[in-house]
Length: 342
Image 1 (cartoon, rainbow, N blue to C red):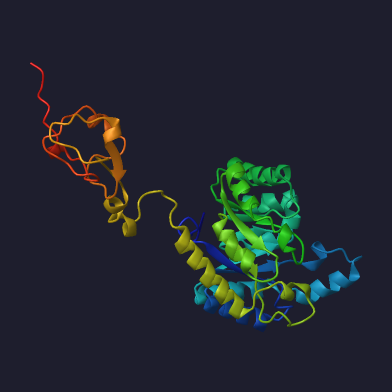
Image 2: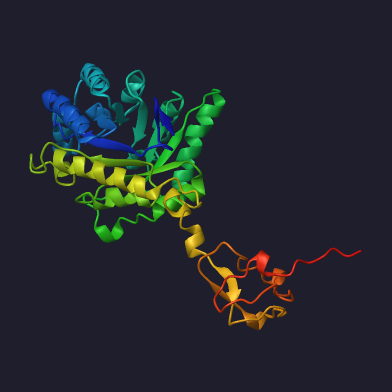
């Protein structure tokens, strides 16, 4: 998946999910962008919404909390510029149609939250922008994931648009118990849907987010906060602080190095050992000149370089040109040369 000039096939995209951890403070939101960039994150992500189109006023406590976290759209424009200045991608999750439309000019890619994987009108709006879309799959079964993907692709096809799509394995619990992180689902998503896959983490700590790369994730999203005890807001506790984010980046880059490119060929460091560690066909015991070699006369020893295992038919039945000691590799020059028939 390519987002601006970032290719997830070449490098894992590490997303610092600031979300609402700014709690409505523009200054803190901007500071968190700088801290995420310093930690080595490749992208920052926010959540954009008009509360009245997101939470029912009947849920008064939740409505009032999110209303206090709501940033104005012009503030998101400024945050997007700050991200660009810091050299990180700017992403956001829209939670209503108007927010999705307004974000089009300032985000490098859209993120769809797990809860909105069945919010088809929203999927259609982001799909028709042609921008990359990253969909979290918490709460969803395979049928719902397929329907969401098909909705975005249908809208694009109808409008003659191109655009890439990624699916993030996610478990929508806050926090997720480690025995339910189910990282093996990352591989299943890749096999079944044939697109870029990643992982949106809600576990405590950074172990699961790092291990997701070994499971095949090419995008890793981790909630990010200035301090895990910043307030009583739930998301801080399951977020990485700047020190943990820097450590997560270090671990992911190390795992990327360890994973390599997946091509199964001899590595440069082992090529010079091929001859030393492979075997040659050798004499099983002392043999005189003129002996006709049988299978019982053969053994296989290191190093390689002579007749290799599998070439026994090139040796059995041949006459020795001279004596040979037990364990000595049988080479072509030790055999009487065969003459071509007349």
